[in-house]
Length: 104
Image 1 (tube, one colour):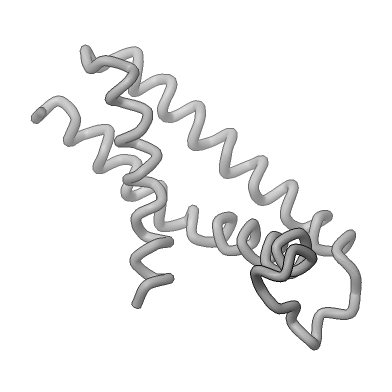
Image 2 (image 1 turned 90 degrees about the horizontal axis):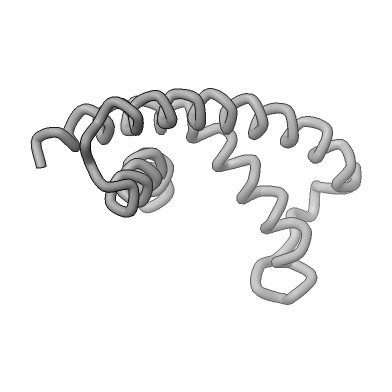
């Protein structure tokens, strides 16, 4: 269990700048497909269309995903933890800051 603290801590720190791509993905989903399904309501001030948001979201999420993936692949190779435990714990630790801000 103590061998999982370093990867979880690193992913918790990676989750702090990860708040921005997580919010952007949520914003696009909330104003696009989820609003079309009736699960959320569109922002009435959002009249520029979704293409502009996708031009912003794709590079931000891509760069963050690349950094997150490279860091975790390197950490996963160095830890003797099972990959079925490693990846869910690291994903949850990365999402924790976004969920903490979203809930409070």
